[in-house]
Image (cartoon, one colour):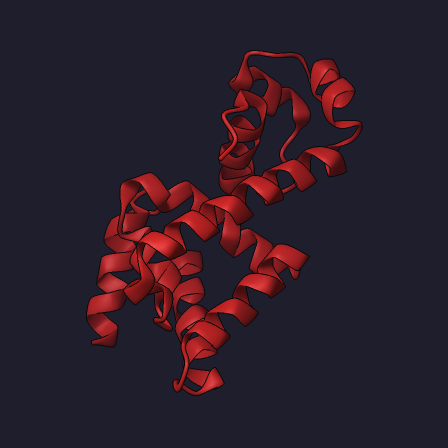
Length: 155
């Protein structure tokens, strides 16, 4: 996975603020100027392509390590129960809600990985988790607890 501090800062900032996050904020997080980001990536879209590539690689790694979870309709919710994955899960949720290639590809992969589970179960699991996230419960900053509550309610 990328060790590029700009890409990592952009993933975190996009997770928190969405894809309209300003380059100045990303630059400040990475300790560089917005001009340097533009020089390195050519545009904000170029930076977004780099962050999507980083997140795709992360998904591949996590799914290969957690095969049992990868075949679950609740894959993203299960990942979100881990603090270290929370920002990346939120990034994926933004991607899915935006309808980006990354988001569409992930949904299709989750459906395929669910095997015999009907397509609607995977979509229902994602939709229920998204609504839970959007409504945010009592503490909007604690995604792992929110994800655990969601999974407990589904079981």
